[in-house]
Structures are given as structure tokens and as C-alpha cells.
Length: 399
Image 1 (cartoon, rainbow, N blue to C red):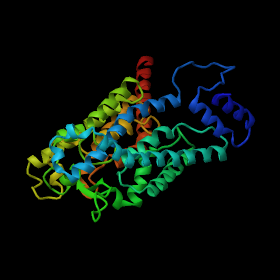
Image 2 (cartoon, helix red, strand yellow; image 1 turned 120 degrees about the vertical axis):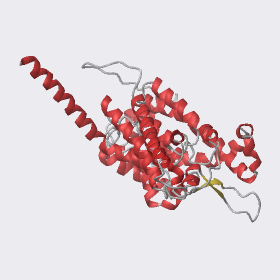
Image 3 (tube, rainbow, N blue to C red; image 1 turned 135 degrees about the vertical axis):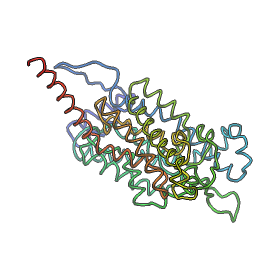
Image 4 (cartoon, rainbow, N blue to C red; image 1 turned 60 degrees about the vertical axis):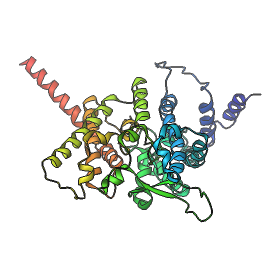
């Protein structure tokens, strides 16, 4: 007897009990559900929540694989700086992949293991089906945290994010904050020394006795925030040959993921485009302030403020946040006009925070969470505005 038949028998055996959601979740995750609609009108479609989540995961896989190689590459490049002279030729090697996988995969395992365990517990306690919403969150979390984050910290943050960020609101589809960013925000405020600053982990394995466990190096944002000369080129940032959070370094792969999400109609192109325009607008304003001489070289704001406006799109986690988290259909604005406003403000505020908070030279996380809170308000006023326009047209016709 096959696995599918055994799971079906377990479903029938525990039907109506508290353990039923657990077996139903495992069955529907591995196989197509064998239930069909018997009455009432319904729509037949090839997509459902699980397939939507799987599509987003497919868009994230290239960033994960690249992040694994990058972890190993930054390790060996920190030991032998000449490797940076030919990053492409020294990047895709088995040594880089093995070391990177040894470091990155535990983050993925802890994220999924702890998060899905919490989901199963809530499903059993509340008696509802296990929701697929964490499938994407579980992949996003290891891609947006520092590579050296202790696993126990990650586990605590995941529990907080799933319980406080989602379950207390009623589960998937009811939360007002992006769960992955809620997890990162918890880490940022609970363990700030692990999440911010101008240093990042480069490698963690001892090369020989007596060497430190890790070597730290500045990110582009960290060096600019400290008014240092950039140590990586813009092309390095675009391709991703720089230290940083696991999945946020390669703007090129993030762009490919954006096109894939737009093509599959999972991600909103309006939010992505408007967020880019907002970031460019804020960058242009800062460049104008510097050109006017209002901010002098040596000021704590000069480094990031004087950076060419479009460079903000390829440094830090702005591109990743815009593509994969600002477009979350649950927490983003729902109206078309609201999406333009919502996205523009995310890009605008992200660069604003990035420049004016040198201690935390990144702002996309806080900008998205802030706009998550205001998204319903934006939609409310957009809808009210549409109603007023229709009422005016109606009055003009009946006058």
C-alpha cells in the first residue's frame, strides 16, 4: 500500500479529532486533495493558496542558491583578497557551495521546522486546517537575516513572528504585518548588536589553530554611513559579490524574480514600480541638497546622502524588500491607486531612514512595516474618493 493510501486512511481514522488538521495538512501538501465540491456555485482553477506560495518560493530559490555560494566565496575572499580580482571566476566552486550550505541550510531548517511546528500546534488547538502561509515566510526569513545569527535567536524570533505577527490576528490572510519582517523586527529590537552596525559576518570556520572564529567586514551601506570610501563597486553590488544577508545581495537575481512574479501575476508591478520611483525621488532630493552645498563633506549624513540616487536600488536590501515583501497581497494595499501610493511611500521612506539613521543604514524593513499599518487607511480614502466622484457624476446627470 502506497504512502498516499496510508495518509488517506489516517485522515479517515482521525477525522473529527484534534489531530485531523495535522494529517490533512501532510496529505494535501504532498498530494492533490481527493475532496470535490458537491453543491453550490464554484470556480474551477488550477491555482490555490499552496500553488501561489510555491510560485513565490520558486522565485526565491535562485537567491537562496546564490546566497549559499556567496557565503563560501566571502569566506575564502576574506582569507585571500586576490580572489576579489576575478569574482566570477572564483565564485561558483564546490568549496564555496559546501561551506555556504553548511552555514545557510541550518537557518532554513530552523525557520521551517520551528515555524511549521507552531502552525501545527495552533491548528490542533484551534481545530482548523494547517495554513500554507508560512511556506513563503519560512523561506524569506533565512534570506533576510545575518548569516551568523545564532540558531536559538532565530527560533525565538520565528515563534514570536508566527504567534504575534499572524496567529493572534486569525492566521493567514488576516494579519496586518508581514510575518517575515515581524520576525526580523523582533531580532532587530531584541538583539540589536546582531542585526545592525557597520560590520557583517564573513566566515565562521577556523582555518588553523589560534585564528578567530570569524572575520568581519564592512558592507557598502556601512562604509557609506561612516563616510568611508566604498570598498565594492556598483557592479559587484548588482551581481551580488558582496557580504550581506543571505538572499539580499544579488540585485540581478532579484530583478529576475520580480519579472517572474509579474509574469505569473503573483506580485504587483504597480507596487514594485512605484516603490522604485519613490526611492529614486528621495535619492534625487538628497543629491540636490548635497549639490546645493547645504550638507558638507564630513557630516554624518554626507556619505549616503551624496551617493548617486539610483545606486540606492542596488545596495542594501531595498530591492529584495520591494519585490518579495512589499508585494505581499495580504498586508499591501488592495486598490490599484492605493498600490501606487503604498509603493511610492515605501521607496521614499526607505531611503529617508537609510540616510538619517547612520546607526542602522537600512530602512526598507521599517518602511514596509509602517506602510503595512497604513495600507487599510490608504485603501479607505481611495474608495471614499471613488464614491465621491461617482456621486458627483450622478448628481450632474440628475440635475
